Image (cartoon, rainbow, N blue to C red; front, side, top):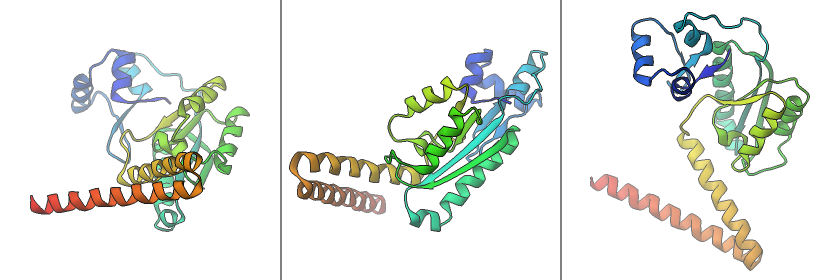
Length: 219
């Protein structure tokens, strides 16, 4: 069963977002809520509005769940476990068949993630129809479009359960950006220059956080 965001439903079925909400209030359509409270509309519900029936054959419903956090500290705090639980709840609500769960502790910049490679091999082998992740960045910071293309070439698709990143995700992004800057600085000015650039950037960001905190307190 395919799930659509309000924007996707509006584009494919010609139903405005306002109409979708009205149909929901009138009991004509029942969306699925993501863990973050966002609406997802089952294709069967949208087709029913037009007096059509969805194909009930369970082809294309095999889901591979990919969860990732950047540090062991995040995993120990339960972030990885909660992320996987949210994916499972979403998959079950959508009627997907969970055929694999892939959990990883690694940076989104790391190109040698064992579980991600295992997931992609399953996609290439035709064992997975849906790659289910929390946010796009859980799969990769850069090169996400190539992963989409790879999945599409094997008849699979990537589906995200949330559109907005959490505070933890934004914090991970900042750390990854610092790592990128440090890496380029090291290439330009040597290893010592890279460490210096990373230290100065971290100090600058901490200073901005402190200034923001002072401003908030003053207000």
